[in-house]
Length: 78
Image (cartoon, rainbow, N blue to C red):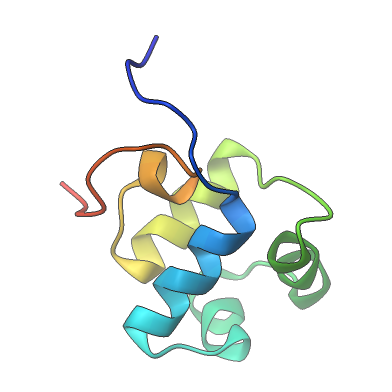
């Protein structure tokens, strides 16, 4: 198990990463194939993305999956 603590919501981290990457929801939908309704729900914090979706988001936004889940860890993707 990870030694990291969860310090922020996944929804906030997705929004932060999108802002830093200068990407809009439609960009993420096109790059990942994630349904636009599902992405909207993730951004609103209604649902937590499953691991396969986190992987797609992290890859498209060039951030670490663990960081995207809200853990206190480096943002940089390895």
